[in-house]
Length: 297
Image (cartoon, rainbow, N blue to C red; front, side):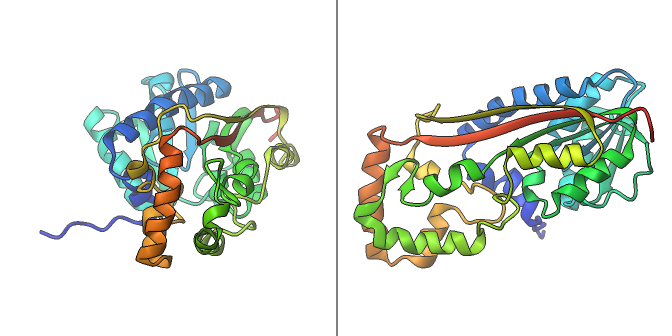
């Protein structure tokens, strides 16, 4: 029997994001539950609504929306990954809610399969960070919404932490003693994800401007940034096996690709004791944004 090879988005979301570690997956879902609830609260999702979840992934937001729209409502799962749409469809079928779902393979920038003014709510979670043309995508969100329709977005603002977190430091830990080795890893990641990458080429002010320029009114944002000790203990073996996003290798894979055995030993010998001593810090920033379309189409 041949095992199906999943596309890069499904591989990362269903497996590589947590590196196969069940405990890390549990913690990720524990974090994401309140994010889902906040996105849906900001969207004021109500019974009977038609909700379009753009970049639905494994269905975190969309399945939460199904509970709120009730038997008279409908949810459209939209994603670029057919594998993730198939996964979500299977979950919907198992849950007995398939008749209240549609599954649409589409990019955020081209929702042409959805007519003008067809949905009450558009939601996204960590989607625009992968979209090269964020302005056109948000204009598409505006187009498909009915008059008085609502938009609700959650996005990590990766620009905040990137340079300091992965420049001359690793999780806030100084890498100068192994700088020659670290430069090799940094060069690999910079090549795969330069500063012009969609994940890094915007901040919260850009996001606000894109939404306002698309024609939305009553635009609101809550931005949170922090530098702090990790909320959970970082375990070296688990840390190096997870990939931060679908476009990059795990640290374990990167070390195997660009470092010699001696270089790997030297790097691990320096970084691992620091990590396990509690010296690590994290830099994170996130934005919730919600807005309303005017009453004119």
